[in-house]
Image 1 (cartoon, rainbow, N blue to C red):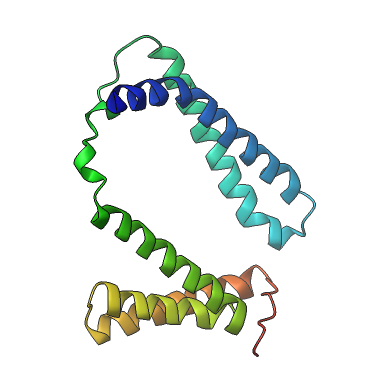
Image 2: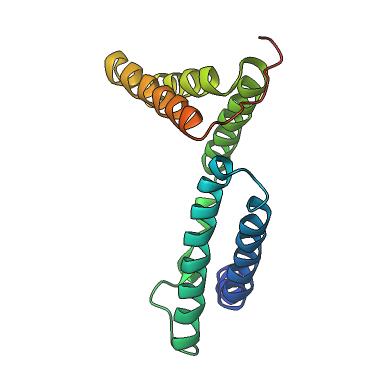
Length: 159
């Protein structure tokens, strides 16, 4: 019963979902036109590419209307809904909440570096050298983008 409901919902909600995403992307493109040139570059490019992909998906759905999809979500097993499954989901949201808290407290660049380092070390038990290299590279990339796009980072609460 549950698998049939999921299959029905995924079949009937595909087009409305794409239309919702398309509406949000058009709004982002429209709003970003009021920004300065450097600030609107990134959201405009991402929104334009997203609009293109959404239109391609709507075209694909129109062409395949009535055809049976090869990827059918009706095979979702109920054994996936175990306590471990929910614990992994909660752990993911806990990491995201931690990142947002760090972002507010110490700022974007240090929070990104510390978050990636902690995530790689504690969640995936990655060696120190690759973890430090990846987190340092991310901070350098974000700093470079901030300089190139003349971004003003939000003021942290502690610094």
